[in-house]
Amino acid sequence: MADQVDNSKKNQVKAFLVTGLLIFISFLYYKVSPYYMYVVAYIWFGFAYGMMLQYGRFCFASASRDLFAAGVPRMAVGILLALIFFSLVAAILTATNMTTFHAGPIGMHEFIGGLIFGVGMVLSGGCASGSLYKIGEGNGTSMLAIAGISFGQAIFADVGGVFNNFLPQSWVDTANAQTFIPKDKITAWFDYFLAGDVFHKPMITLDKTGLVSGMQGIMKYLLSDAIINTIIPALLLICTIYTFYIRKGFMKKRAKSGASTGLGAEMSGVWSMITASKRTSLMGVLIGITAGLHIFVLKGMQMKFGVTNFGNILTRLGHTADLSIHGTVFDPGYWYITTQEAQFGAWVLEKVGWNMHDNIYFGVSNGIPEPWRNPALWMSLGIIFGAMAMALLNKEFKFKLPKGELIAWGLFGGLFMGLGARVALGCNIGAFFIRVAGGDPGGWLFGVGMVGGAFVGVKFFNWWSERKMAKELEAF
Image (tube, helix red, strand yellow):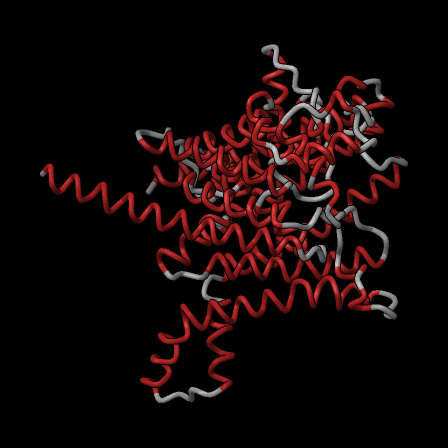
């Protein structure tokens, strides 16, 4: 008992040290320049996400695996609750011009990217956000997954050569005919994909369609972006999950106890499913609200400093080498993962002599800032540190080196997630969670693809496990 108390106290001290380190780093940034409070905001929102993700065990890969392999809907329901609450906050922010959200190009690339990403997140045992918080718990396989995401994306965004021989001619013709991107930046397969196809697709949110024409004020955004695009589909999914995974057992128990089995019972069944894991459901609500607050704070800081992108601040501070040709860096203004990891991978590759600026992704759009001047990368680090602090407090931190086939699963799963994220221009957060809640119907295309890919990944793992067990039994 005394040893348990001592370990608990040690973990608390470690958690406070982790938090204290970030406070010290934040103070240093402020002393260098008050402009760097922009970076500090990203750090602490990342920290908050990390704590909530870890406490609620929030992971899109776990949601798919639990649902398809074990019939447990806890995580899937938590994610849908987060979507619902975030959409309400996002609609209010849009109505008051306090949003940083922008829709993505809508098209089948989102579905295809989601499909690839879904397979990868099941292989690696964690989605992009899940892998980050699991690193905070000491999970070595998740570290490999993030490495796969980082370097896989960076290389994919800059590889041309023989791969360009497989490009559709329509992409090549369209990319060569455009005038808004310098020709020397169109070198890789991915560049032709962007300039020749994706950049020409429409970017819409439901409030900008004829669906709510004639409506004004906040109700326009609440009805279109929140209720129609997000809440109704999310509630339908919750009811579908209840029908296929929970209803039969729930009604059977009620019938045995002599309770009614009418419409009221159905509502009770849905509610019991939502509250089956109060921890996950509560974190879903808090994550949704925090994601909205994140947008509000970043928009406020942009207004305070008179900027639209952190690249404007870096220009004022003289760090122009960090920027794209348009003077920008990746600065989403909201919760996002994968692009900052790609920037880190590109930064490392440039240090060993690989020119990563001769493309659209880094050279034109996102830049490659030094890691300590990369606000979005600090958000990812904040997730890791926040999850670490929470894991220590919950006595759930344990450093685990990957062994055997887990090494391959982690790396290849990360590579698949990176590839899917680039094709779809986002991951489970940026291409699904943020877009859907922001009123972008294309987010659902990624979501459907991601779930489909996860289903394939679960089936593959089942086949692999059965095959491996059969061989072991045969050898025995």
